[in-house]
Image 1 (cartoon, rainbow over the protein chains, first blue to last red):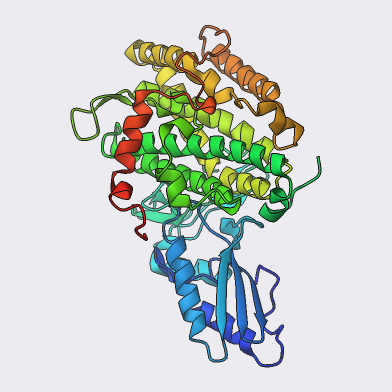
Image 2: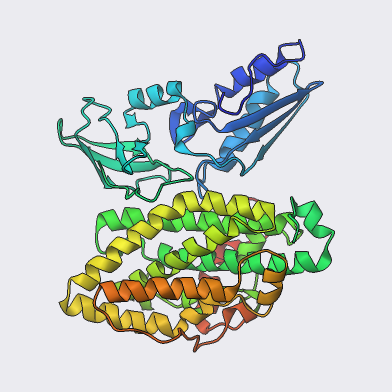
Length: 182
Length: 274
């Protein structure tokens, strides 16, 4: 877990682990293959005598799915045996970035037909992304803005398919970063 | 000035809280009304990719306003929907430039919107917004530091977007350049209102909420001067605010009409849950 949380840092009743497992079933309404855990949205889970406190990071500030996600987390975790109360809040520190999506999450995205967020090459500020269909790196960003706040529009010059990628966001784009393909 | 970690701490210092609230209203109302003006372009932008991009930018910017309204809500100012929809024009703190209509007509009736004005207004605003957010990362109010950092993640692309439009249209020459130059004159007449911190500006600085107004103004002007020079354009004097200072609650009819339109559904039943 990116949030530094161990699945097994428990009070002995295994409740925390059960909560984390429940979170794996709460998905993003706009990218339904990804759980909030895959997205790297869960920063902290605390369990104290059956009372669960969850701190989550909002992905995109204007994302209309955030309220739904919050509600879904509350409802799902409430069904876990032994949970008496759930409180979910969004916090802004640390900031969520697209690097927080887990390896598992990147794999699931690709299977769904959405490329994971391009990875920056910090030295020269360029980025690289492989086509989710044919795997070719010969791709271009057509529009950094896409149908939702979290997606960009790309095109594969090898298999000539348009595709979407999760929009890369970072807290440090670097002096050299131009958003252009390297 | 010491760091103020959260709303509870801010509420212990009455004057600090009042000045902080003033700054937050300026930030919130600026993003809110400009994103509304942006949303009016939906379906009318010059081409379909721009429609996708501009509506996404407007959605993000509305999200930025939301964060600021949330910070205000944490300080006891009321709920976010009421702050966005329920406040009359006289208490709004956005700069007048940002409330001005996109052109003649309305979204539904003969919209003759001015793309040059839109590009110039948005570009100049995003340049300023980026500089301001960088300063807010050092604000004495810690929740505002965090908000600024989160907003910057998205705003980066907004600035890049308008930068591209601005340079391309100016460098295209001909009618495009003529219209852009006219739009710059118009935006310049009101940009002083964006640069203003309003009546409580000095206290904002004293409380360590933000760097001095003059420092930011100079920074923005220097950027503009270099930009105009690099594109072979003429120099400008100090930007003005001819139609009034929005930070002091002075507004034009355009804002009243905009609020009527955007709050129409809210006003049917303000207590409805969304």
